[in-house]
Image 1 (cartoon, rainbow, N blue to C red):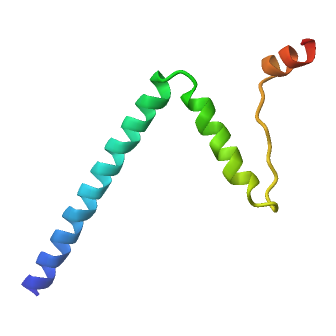
Image 2 (cartoon, helix red, strand yellow):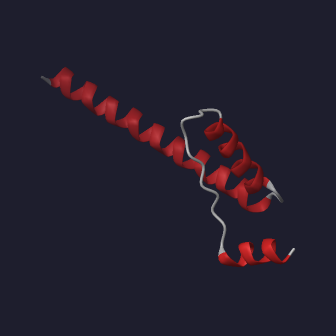
Image 3 (spheres, one colour):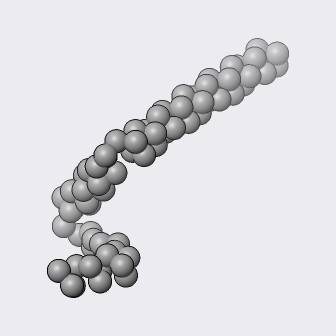
Length: 74
């Protein structure tokens, strides 16, 4: 019983360390996307490319009314 409790404890520690590493990487990625000019646009286009590779998906382009107005006015 004691060995089982120790295994569970170690599993929880490993899981928590993984969550911490994941959170750190996500924070680093968010910082890069926020500070690098054009990085978010590139990520957006990459996501669209991944979605478009599967022909069964419908792609919806999110545009604000302001962006739509600019596009229509030229």
